[in-house]
Image 1 (tube, rainbow, N blue to C red):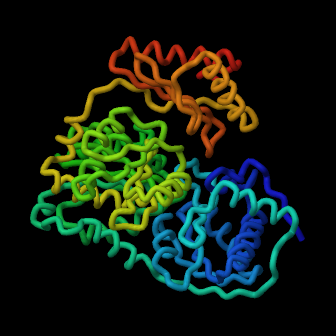
Image 2: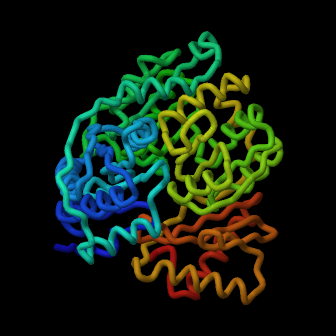
Image 3: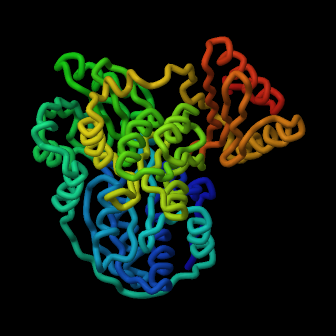
Length: 463
């Protein structure tokens, strides 16, 4: 037996497709056979499996488990929950060697996929390509593994609460916070967490519903924060927290209704962390504001720019020993007093603690940040087979022109006006552009540069 995947689902740092079109139960079964075989050949045996709240997740889980068991791997099913709960189960389960979460993350309801971890390390890039090659060759072990159910939700929530550290509970008890689970997988954990936290907590959309009836769970899209902003205004709250569909990405809104983007959030975390760990390296992705890198250095830290992608970030943290990293997309990674993976519930609790330790409200912290002008992420559709080639064309032209740029992930170009970025998404058929300047005129010139580069490649932001 063998299996050939639709090549579009084997992404850089996870596996993801459209259910019924590019992804189905046969794919899940083949992923299980390949991953289980690989775990066994690496000397492991037991694989934790979790799922998000999408309507297709139970079907994919059943097929995945069948494949894992057929390879001889033993399965520990932890049930419905956030992706970080799966990471927690793998990190803390002494008998667990690997883990797979079935999740479509922040993508539309018809999408789904798999995030994997093996021996405490992110599973991505060449690892995922290897699964595809194993399936195509039918390079699978045979066996008859076992299946057990294991409850980890309460232990997971208890560990999240520890993120408050030694901050006085009486100081935290004054906080009034809004939370929006977006009908995603965070809901049940959030209900338990809010009941254990000091302060007053106002919860939205905690019922898990894979059709996402209230709004789509992607906190990087400001329209999806409207309900949270309305709650903050109506109740006079200090700030609000929102989650994506599997709760590994966080969105934050301050008491004035201003969105605190991922790089601005990392400024707060970095200031707090660098008081506890002076001189530490803090990693941010290529989409982050220059103000963040300047702030890290200003607080005595070592800023490091790196590629976008949760698996890529985790690998770089392990390589450098950095205690903190983050992305514009709202992935925040704490290795300081935590496990180094992205957990939005944990980040939310650390934000509560940071506000108290820094002696300023989240609104005050946001208000003190530099007022730079920047675009949101400008996304435009480009065919999967074209997007990386288009970025490479731009890189070659910039190199020939002697431009000042970095090519860590796409191209980030520095000019007297500020900087602009063009990169290919690893999860969608889009190119992503962003620009930042200190003046409106400078921002216009940067955007014009992006448009000119796209035009030379036969593309436009309207495509």
